[in-house]
Each structure stands twice: as C-alpha cells, then as structure tokens.
Image (cartoon, rainbow, N blue to C red; front, side, top):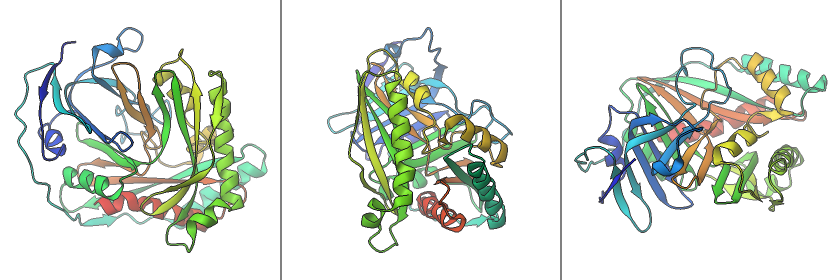
Length: 379
C-alpha cells in the first residue's frame, strides 16, 4: 500500500483526531518514546496469515479479554488488527501526516476544559461481598491462588461527552501512562494504562509484572508497599507466571528488581522481565501472555472459568491487550486498564483488584474506587 508523507505541524495532535469525528479512529500516546500516533478511517482489517506488516505504517491491534463476548454492550467491538487510511505521527524529531487517500485539511482546535455533570447508578457493596466470598470459597476448595475481580460502574452525563477534553485531561494527569482511545461507531474505549503486556523491538522482548497497590493518601505508602507481605505475594505470583510463559518460547528470561511505580493516585509494585526471541510475532507473544495473573488469576484456566461464571458484567476490551505494531512488526501491547467505555451519554468505568486468600473485601472495594479516579478525574 502506497502512503504519501506530508510534513504537518499542529499545536495539538488532537486536532487531527477531531477532524475525523465520524470515522473509526484510534489515539495513542507512548510516554517512553514521547510519541503520538493517530489513525483515522478504516482501510481494512488485516488477515494475519496473508497480509504483511510492512505494507502499512502502523496497525492497531486489540484482543477482547475473553474469546467470546456476552451481551450487546461490547458486541463487534475490538478483536481485530486494523490498518487505517490516514495517520498522524508526532515524536521528538518529526511531525507528519501519512495517507493512502486524498489528504484532508486539518484545522487547528482549542480544547476547552469541560466539566461533565454525571449521575452514578448506585453500586451495591453487598453484591461485591457476595462475589468476594465466592472467590474465597474457590481458594478454600484449592482451585485458585489468585483471582482478579473487577467492577463496572455506570454513569450518565447530562450532555454529550467532550472526547478531546477527556483525552487531554488523561494526558495531563497521567504523564507516565500510555494514553489510548479507540472509536468505532457510537462507542469509544479510552484510558490511561501504566501496564505493558509485551513490547517487541526486533528480537528483544519486555513485559511488566504490575501487581500490588497502595493509595498515595496512605502515610509512607511507597515504602510500606515495598515490604507488605500480602502485596509482595500477589506480585510474585505475577512475576513467576510471566517468567514461565516467556520461557516456554524464549531461550532466556531476565527478571529485574521489584521497584515502585508512582502514578497520580497510587503506587504499584513493578518488575520488568526481558527475554530474547526472533521467531514469534508481537501478536503471538500477546496471545502467549494474556491474561497474566495481574488481570485474570492463577492458575489461569481455573481463574478465567470462575470469572466467566461469577463476574456479572462483560469485560470486552477492559484489561485486554491493545496497542500498535509498526511496519517492521515491532511495537507495544498494553492492557486496557484505568479505562472506560463511552456509548452516547453513558459511561461504563472499569476497575479491578487482585484477590488472594489474605485479602479483605472492604479494602479491595476501596482499592477499586482509588483506581476509578483515573477516569473520573478526566471528566
């Protein structure tokens, strides 16, 4: 596919996104490379067996959390690898527009700070407790060691959602996170994820074990988290599983030291694992690693079976892999956490927490509320 390159400098990359408001589109900010990539207007869904990465500047890939989708909310949304007709790329050196179609005029925009007026559908702590006790029974029966439970909260806005304002707030509030948005039809999934599932640079691979959380409101939260037995155990389950999954296909795996990752509202425990492999594609590795015990549980199969039966909402792209692949097959797959799905004037926000036998129902419930701040503060 022939793309032409046009030098284009915009005051704000969101001007490009805003120019394609009726199209299928994605927005991506990589904080490590300080790079924006925006793709607009679907060209085609890629057949991974026959199409070549090298034919397209970037491909947007997403995989639903579960293979099958229940209900209408997430139906036919995600689970594809998509090439677009128009791309806008901004990094430290360049700013340019790539297109295989007629180029569009991109007017500059001003993004107002918009405060959404929301009403929240009441959430039920007793329903959470019931779910939590079912998880503890699963542990007592010896089926799982860890299960990641999640909540879906429903909000209604008095007005339409101002997407550019929300994305700008996500960027401003979360400088260390990957900021993403994907729109198809009337649905938009967006968020600020701190977690890399797998990153590929030629034969070099990297994955984050990110599990264990304390709110920053706690006194000395960071130092306490580094020595907290419950969170260290929860974190180690994730580290060991990612290591085993990498070793199934890679020759060697290096496990880094466990450190603090600081975000706006929380501290996490993070361990970076690296490996080497030249055989598998980024998508192969995504399928190999998803979901880690930071998102599903351990053992994987038993935890997912339990969640499918007892979690009363569909996850869709929440906690699922999504990201960018470049023309060389390199790229980054994050997991769609600290996220929400917007459908017209409804917003469905998602938050999860890792539960082990020593977990407390109220503490975990409070942890999800802290994690939900990422989305709510952007509104």
